[in-house]
Image (cartoon, rainbow over all chains, first blue to last red; front, side):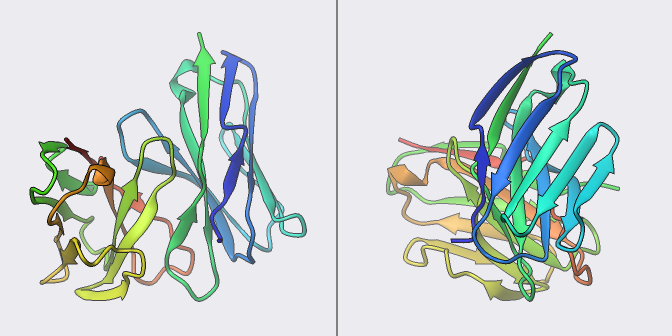
Length: 111
Length: 115
């Protein structure tokens, strides 16, 4: 299966701390995306990293990709209570239009 | 720009009943997806449309699920008859046709409870 797996399944931190989530996948990809899902809501696209990129930044988000290890990490710096949500990685494969979503990390930021 | 619209937001039905969900994608987005998200899991693709044609329905339980996108714009997903295990959030997403990297825009979802 191409589906990614996030680690940890759940993470609880204090406001202001950094949060790191990891994603592992099994097959070759051409891009990896991270999405956020607030409770009871749809998913929101956060950031996309291409297979030939190693690191990407967007605001307080930093994503890394290691294709040799088939893994990615999402770092949220200076977390806020509003960052409380589930975070999913999704992988895209060359020649395919669909995405395969992981199982998600549930992040709780305590004010 | 208006986002992906879905209705209803919530639906409760008895098993063996039928249910239908509606989705209106972002204007100009040729590709439309229906996902099933069971509680505690990531979204699983059920069906993907390119305009009004089906691109991938390999994970759609075709004995009970059907979907259409007749005019290449809005879409309906139907379950008939529903089973208890169909309880989930049904997410609709859309994306531009000519993007190599497939950023998808999601609607708020329909939460289905089958009793």
